[in-house]
Length: 343
Image 1 (cartoon, rainbow, N blue to C red):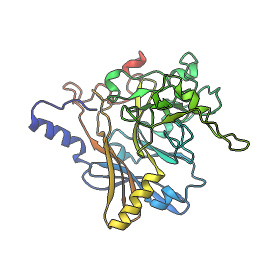
Image 2: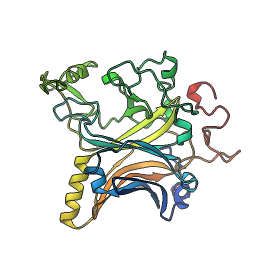
Image 3: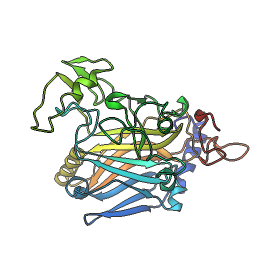
Image 4: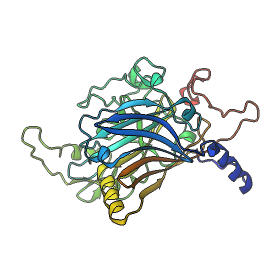
């Protein structure tokens, strides 16, 4: 993902542009409708994004259920991404302290998958729907790779394929989620005052700090809460998330809050110009699949229209023998990365 193309600057520029040159015109990759809103996935030059009205993201969210949406064949050829899975979390999700910190805010998860719907549904080649979830949340797969159906969720890619600073977090029962894969959090979010950093009375907590935060959840009976002094840092509203499954990179995810969209929309109306927040997406030493992939993630609002997605670039090295990267196709031979031990 983030390896140097070549030492020569001329060659670097030329090679990096090759991967996105064919995406020089706007292309609709997929679309669906909800509550009267038309939602599109668009590839425009070097940007791949979901586009819909601000009201779709902030007001008319009731009844929206996450769904897999395959990209068109033409669009799938332009980058490593093959499908969208977008989900709304009205109460947020862990990490959370139930006092406003962490990811416990209404937000969206926009997964850009490197696999297709046919591959990830129950019974598919990369079945993301099947795992043992014995905890209180029925979609959180037990963090036990000894359970046969959970092993693939916890078979990690080789380090060279993992974006720098990304790590697996086991708080709140772990972050391996049915239909999603294993979520990795960023170094930025686990830094000082970050939304993945847990403290007790202002001091950095240990590995079980999250338990004190979990105990602060409101009572389902009367809404009462205890305060154990446990807090997560405040979220700025936009995070990069990496997902893996069975040793593969399967998704890059911009995760963003409703609050961020509201702020950008208000500022865009008041200032009469585009409002945009953009961050680098952490890069890996190498990428498993050849093609354009996320370099940055962004949320942008203009005239009541929201665009959220990634800026693409291509740093893959062409094979001198076959013209393919070392893992240019997930279905090639065994369909699994070197990490699985079954290539």
